[in-house]
Image (tube, rainbow, N blue to C red):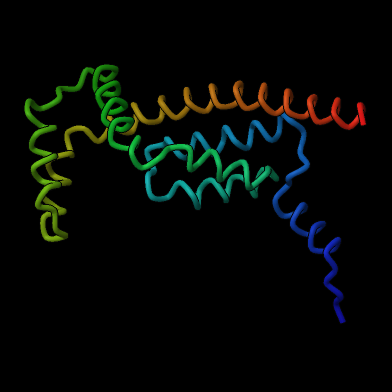
Amino acid sequence: MIHLTKAAIRRALERLLHTHDTPRRTAAAYALGVFWGYSPVLGLHTILGLITGFALGLNRVAVLLGIYSNLPWTLAPYYTVATLGGAALLGADVPPGILAEFKAALDGFSLRELGQLLKLLEPLFWSYVVGSTIGALLAAAIAYRVSLAFIESYRAHVSQHRHDN
């Protein structure tokens, strides 16, 4: 018979989530999540983030926090700017009026019109992939540095507070 005590459950959760990693590993987990959250694989970001987090033995909570740092109201502006940046890097032509056409297509969107919507965006596919991948890498690098500084500062504060008491 298995006895589930609070301590046993806590140890199991800590092993599963890796919440006691070093600051560098926790920051890396957060940055990995940010990468997936801003990557071009929108819709698969959670599963891919968790798979890579498990594979690398990283803090799953930090990975999830990173993934969901790309909030719903930032999605459209981020992917628009990333795609336009990708188009500039690739020298791709952005069809004139595509943003207005895309907005109009979304206003009356139905599954029947999905093919039409995808056809409209097809010329920008590689611009989207390149731009959002570069954006995801930049966001992850920034997230790593900022979160590492925050985690180290927080842990130093907690350590000092414990020492003072």
